[in-house]
Image (cartoon, rainbow, N blue to C red):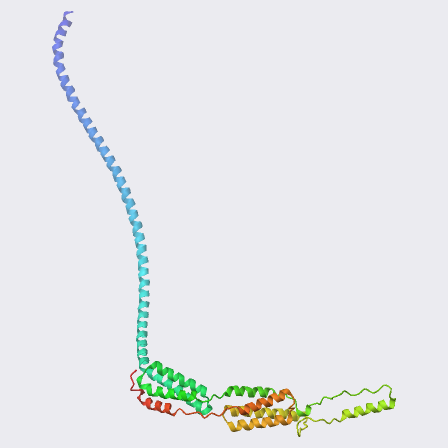
Length: 356
């Protein structure tokens, strides 16, 4: 019993001595744990940091890919716009080339027009003078050939109006001569040639409707008496036979001495000869041949009075028309344009030296 107690007394110090190494061992064992924990924390932090960095890299790569895609799309759009711009530039170059060609053409046309205008400016005075000269020459021809005073007046008035618009002092002498000729022509008596010709045409158209003197019929004053009903048959028969005999031969006064009895074909030639006479008078009127005009109208009046029924109103009207035509004034002593023509001749050599 004592041995165990002794052993327990000895065991306490041994236990105390053994406790000290045990505490040291425990402390030594905690350090690796702490190191492990720290390592684990550092590894976890590293893993966490790596995971977080990986997510950021993925996001960055995603954004980078998206931006690259947008840039590619923009590049494609820019390339398309560049192609369009290149096409527009080529079209614009073509249009510019066309415009330059048209500009060059318009410039050449403008140069030609300026040259033409300068030439016109230099020659317009000569052209105006040529027109005036032509008008005066035509007026002179109308007076000398046809004695047409009205046409000559129109030509001279046109020439005078053109000189008035030109306002050239060197043409004053010519203008004064034209004005004097215009006054002389206006002072002439007016011969209505065309009105007289129209009246002759009316008389010609009425010839076919005029009755001849041999066709005139006298109107009986009293109608033939009816045979009495109480007369004998032989006497009534005798009276009827007498009436029939009176119808076979008739003697009457026509009022025209020596009225010719003409067959139908001669009547046709009579009317045509009368028309020819009046047509000759018309031609003589237009050519101002007074002698032939009067002779044809006198012959026509004589044929009308001899062969046609003067008691008819139409024949009397035609005869009166022929008398008025004979009395018409057709002969006019027209003046010449010698003064105006002489002024034109004096101006003609100096046209080339005259300033435009």
